[in-house]
Image 1 (cartoon, one colour):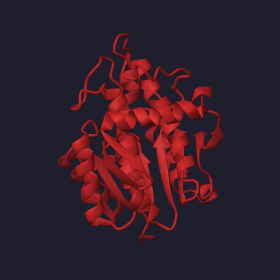
Image 2: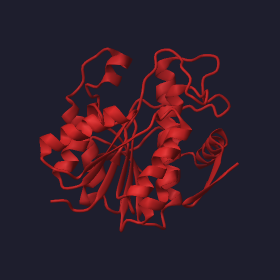
Image 3: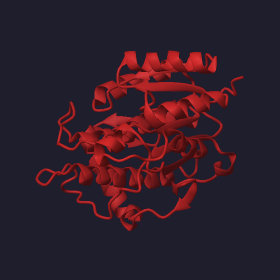
Image 4: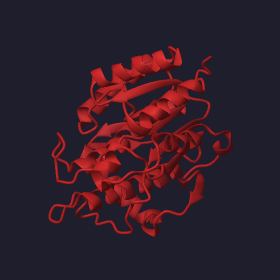
Amino acid sequence: MSNNKLVLITGSTDGIGKKTALEIVNLGYHVIIHGRNQKSAEQTMDQIKKETKDDCISATFADLGSFNQIIEMTKNIKKQFKKLDVLVNNAGVYRPEKRLSQENIEETFAINYVAPFLLTNLLIDLLKKADSSRIVNVVSQVHSNRLNLNDLQFQNDYTGVKAYAQSKTCLIMFTYLLAEKLKKTTTTVNCLHPGIINTKLLKAAMSSIGAPVSAGAENLIYIATSHKLEKITGTYFDNNKPKLSKEITYNAEMQKKLWEKTEKLIGMKFINSSFSYV
């Protein structure tokens, strides 16, 4: 039976995201499956409905490399739902070779960091309408202790590992600053390293075998649903325990500068739950 709590999980058509979606449906939540396109999202939705014998599943889609598609997706979500209890920014990529998004932004940076920044800010008003809500950002222990704000897209010395690590550094910094911005609300913001998990991303990055997808999903589900974390915000988790991320991620001045640069990149300025084009 549904507990009427609504969860949106990005990148939930395979890997950790898909397993997390299935298990959260089993916990009684209404889950919105996100895929890159309508077909993959709806196929996953139908499959999970069949496996769980539960109709509390919806589907949405957007290429997270496209600002316009993210904006359109959030409009559709707001038409269908009056609140959002949990947003899980799970989708991520690893690109061995440099590629550009539809807005000509380096794709790892665009999908792993800029997309969650935009999507989260566009959905803040729905999250605030829930009695209490959570934003969960899936990051990685592979993050950097350096950040060049003047070259966030590796114009000259791109490598897949450096781009991936930097995108996760930025997402951690976003987690901490957003938690601070929302500290007077009932919305918490946390991030986690899900573990070294046997996903397509791991195989692309390291050609190695990690823990089963179920292990990563278990860690994600804990941060997204555990009653023990209702008041915890602005925290990095590893193996379900609070840990310290790299020192640079706590630099408040760098966090603010990164936020401002991201707003300029997107062409929107976010103030509380509203936004304007700049």
